[in-house]
Length: 387
Image 1 (spheres, rainbow, N blue to C red):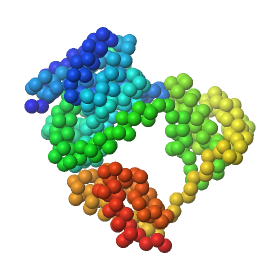
Image 2 (cartoon, rainbow, N blue to C red):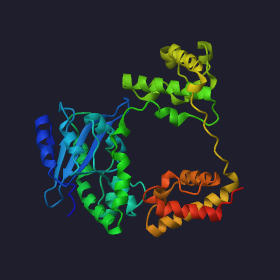
Image 3 (spheres, one colour):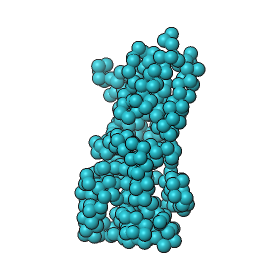
Image 4 (spheres, one colour):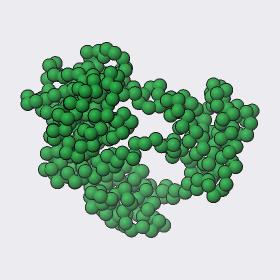
């Protein structure tokens, strides 16, 4: 039996005491479905607007609960539920949910069951959205259109509440269906491997270098990279301090341009076209100070210049053949090829091979090693001559 979208039972929790009692009951369950709704348009940190919980199955004891974080003073009772090793926490594509839960209560769901990854491992498709997955597995069409609505507004509209409830109503059912498929295919261990990095709470702390890793360029000198690193760290901390989106502080393009041109004066800084007048007025002197300090950094403290990757233009045909090989391997296993290796991973494997290595890259460790890592090494021996 499927949830009835028009008569979906749900209840609200709006106090810490009620949340504490509910978490104690949920911890007696084998699995709990979770989802969050949030707003992140004008702040650095996502603002949690709603937490949805579902336990049980339709026609049995399905219980859908909407937890209102705007009215609850203390969400810490959730931590014991999230940390409980006896309760599987079911979420769909939860990267943002995990970050939000970690910030809200200091924990991430463990053990975790990501229905998007489970769907990929069982051959339903790559990177499926929740609604397409529910439709594909159960033939049920979920309503759309509320994802980007204002979840901080009160009262929530009837459409928002219905959308939020349906977003978790199918999670326990999906978990049962996909877990059985994983077991039937002998891929339960694969699933646990995929979940392990997502369950590591250390991955969800503040990261000063997140933008630097994105913006650094291979042609930049060590000195330019040092300036870029300093600028990115400053902007990250300023955005956190003021709880504003990074680009509200200074656009990423401006950081890269400043690092490349290393201006020493306000006149030179004004020539940075991607720097807005308001940025120059508010942060101009700070930016110049950061550049000057970075330029004075001792050479041994600068980032090492990035290694220029081997040009694979002469190996275009071989890369294409290897990607076809991966598609063939994926088809034999009933898996989406993107789950095994995307184009970048294939190119990295080719460079690894051309550098004289005979073992698969770490990206192909675990269950991927026998499935695709070792066959890929063997295929490269046949298809990619070392020139």
